[in-house]
Image (tube, rainbow, N blue to C red):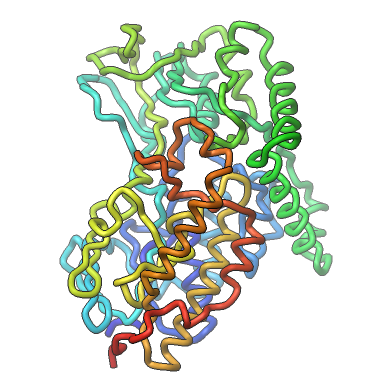
Length: 481
């Protein structure tokens, strides 16, 4: 056995799990497919890349950072934070780089096989790779001869200076990329399928004095983090509630839109026709201003094909291009990617899931003993920091592992408990705003929400505060000796 716990991925999820297991004195290895740590914040290096959650909330509670330079941290600073966490906690010796896991098989423990042929064995496995990993690009005829790139695979060697650029998509990455590059390009066409609701990002730089206070005044950083949590948490009833609260939020965002967009015709085109929160609410600055630049045009519709030197929309509109940038998100409906997972009696996880990934509390799946997921099904958020969810899950998993090691019984959630949990999720989702009719990555083809947690972070934290052994199958299988 190589380690008691095998962790997949070295982003926030994997490193949080590793740091806590190290604290518990449990042996572990982190298997990372790339050559450096960072996950999402390593892969996404596009211009303007930044977090839309306040910096002090987008950090781990046990590794507060007093040195954030602004209210909303940029990508290089977040990646540096993760690198610093690895070094400060002496985690690097426990990380195996270039280890892309292709298969995980349960048989008296877990055996993980990598693409390069290496094999690792452990009693427990924790999948921390997340769903925002593999880019999604629409399958359309593509004969484009110029450079094209996905936002998560940015090619900095491609010059945009004076070029005709087509940006496809108006999601979270597009609203950062477009303002950041519009000053360089010769012309830009932005292809929009549906307009997003935009919350202005009121970013501010922290002064040297402020950072000194965060570092030296006892409790200030933790108090500020709590205030940021409260600030984000109140967004849940505002954006995802109904009645007066939804109306209040809509009036505020429409006022922001009216004050930012002078052209009435453009204003109509960037005004969503769905309820706030039905699709991801975006936090951005400079988006509306960029769309109003004379060399920037907004085109509504979907892409039909790419010709040698142009993007063609379904209505026949032809957008000449030197460079194409895909801002089309990730394959969240296929969180396992190329990896296969075989549980008890060879049960295939991808096949067992079908079109709906599902797990008890978003963490554990029946038929897959001693295997856990971080940021699994129904644990994503649309209003606050997912790091709060990660830390809640890490706490639950640590307790589950400790119970299993003490009792020599595996952690295998019963199917009845999962069915009850899914019934609760479906019931709570029915009246939520994301079920109000819009098309979003929150839902599968059957209209089931398998991504978002239907409540606040406080709710999930309470639900996962302690591990209850009664969730396991009554006749537990023998744990590996």
